[in-house]
Image (cartoon, rainbow, N blue to C red):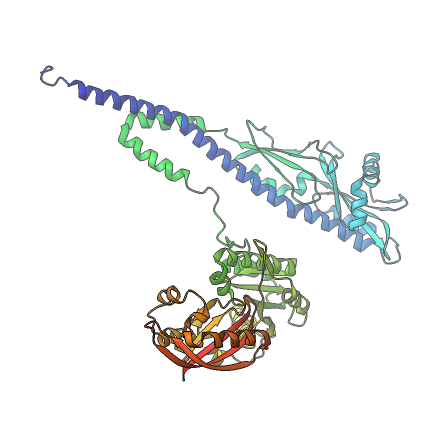
Length: 575
């Protein structure tokens, strides 16, 4: 029996080759799967670190606002300290505030609980350093730290310059406990799967000091450096899983499964691994527009609902913004330029609105803004700032400008339901469109729906059905930019490819030879003398595709186009 089933040497060679290949594949899986899982786990840890780092900014901004409020509510216009004791006690109720102080320019301190030598020393370092000069010059809150607080806890000090009649009076000082200040951000890590160490360096130094850490230490951590705010110095976060890295165990299991299940199962696992390798670990939130990084329609609705919660009867203005002739940017320059225009508009709207409202991209080239706490009269400054902003991008050295049309309605004067306000703002927007674009219009109460047919016709619809032949070309070189179907019919061409292939993009190439000299002389004079909007007439012969001469009556008009400059519009009818 054994002789009967003895394998031939060719079969043995194939089996040996298959065995070697399988062993090689298993070894490769053993090695590469560990690297794969290591990268995957480290990427997840890094994303967790980045999310926490991004959440520090609002917490620090909250502490800055406390120092700003302390300055505004305790030093009056005559430079006298009023209501400090009461306000300081109120601030101590905030869990992260360890102390609040006022220190005059002369060095006199106001405090409910005394001033430690360490705080005075820190203040002297601040005043004598570049950060003190920066705070006074820029009139901005400046953060100092980390510093060691009473009890050994790490803290941050916020200095707010106080000015009285344009002159520096002194500083409002808020000492914050770092861990309490950042507790909402750290809770995601404490309650999650990661241990961490967070370090911070002063603005003036590259030396990092421990700010806070988890109870357990980090093991082979992933590190991420960041700056929560532009003036907060350098920060670092080290993060590792609480349960330890598991990529080694996962790799061993993968190798065992591959060896046991054989080449077929391995191939399936390899395909799955390939798909997983190409799967994005970070998914954009469903509420963020991927191109402009502002709210999409869902994000806008949700944020507005959240911002209005508890004040449903409060006033706000609903603004709809549309990019004029946006399709032209895509058609004329390409979608890359169209995307650049949308991103530039989104940045401009965010800058103009600031923290006073909600901004979202709610359509292709349509943006919606809710200006909170403002009715139509209050928001004029913001709307004018949007209209008059420099809507321009630089595309390989070419300056490309765009303009915006704006329609708006306000609540509760014109309704409380969002859908109703959007409908009214949309009506106002179309009034602007019908009036020539690049402007703003408050909802007037008169519907523009009967007139929207004006905007319903595309260039193709209009040009294809004009009874006369139409040519558009550059006056300086005669290069044809547009011809309509009437021109093709007049000259006997079936399509644009045949026309441009024969005419070679020059307007004079359709002129019959016997009239060529006369027409060229006339066109030269017309180009030199014609004013924008003037209509000049000329009768001459054109030559068709078949070589037939056709007498035509032509009207010429010089036009200023915002994208092409001077253009000649020429219509022709048979004489």
